[in-house]
Image 1 (cartoon, rainbow, N blue to C red):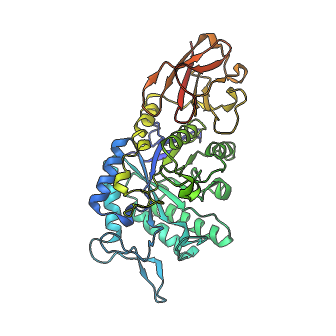
Image 2: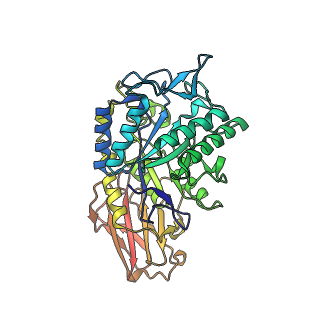
Length: 435
């Protein structure tokens, strides 16, 4: 595989030879900790077939990642003389270690063309704001842990480092730990792989470490709350920051996740997932990470909070629609496109918000219409002389992947959709091209 780097314009992720790339991710946080080799094979091959190209997983995981052994009874760390699990004491004794399985999974992902977003640790191990913990990191052992992991994995080509782990940086000690871990990673891999930081919900890494030299691109977590700041607004904030860095949504709303973490509120579904990821794409992101609530934890006990067995969740509707998303990206080069929400008149930041990108070079625009409602374009907001009477309009149904002739553009810039009801699940992608 080709390693990844930052594009020359600092806006995007590209392959080492400059080829186009966009993260189409999945959160498999417990992948190394909870699954057997055979189960990991099923998971990875399924995701590769569905069009994913990026899998996010944690080495020291959230769910009893220190106390509970992996599927084969192995722990990642030994205890020190005080009886505490110690990041400077990785357990490499004997065969079939925790890290042997981890590397087997990473190698198989590489064979399948999947990049791995590796979190050295979940955030509760350095900031137990909530969760099990315990807090085990100091700046000294964080440097060791980052360096040791990076040295072990440097022979791969499919790694992206993700620091943080769903916690905010609140104290000087937190910053010291993260900076030391980043320095360790950079020392261990010689700068071969990109580094970002996964923050807590409704936050972006840019709020904490944007100006750090080690941060190659920003990652936000638009998350699972409602109401909350939508991902497209956080992406817009990151997009305007200096120095310029790419930005992505590393944890969007999960399919079948209880709304606001409460099953009484109902569950997010495929429409929620689709609308979020297409909006993120057209808000200038360099990637987007899907997730399923029963898969991140590799759930084996269905109930009202985790609603199904993880294997049963592998083919939920939104996952099957990822291929549509990837096919679109492969068919359309958006390199010259920039976010342009203002081409839509009175574009309200609510359920009907329309994300849009335009290209002066291509004399074209792409819009994500969440509910299929009619809207009007502002010809003065285009970066070229827009003449609606000379524009071709086409449309795509992201739920099915079918092209449709439903979108109609009038000479005054009004777009309507014939023979379609406006409402939830009627999201549609509109493409405009000046003749």
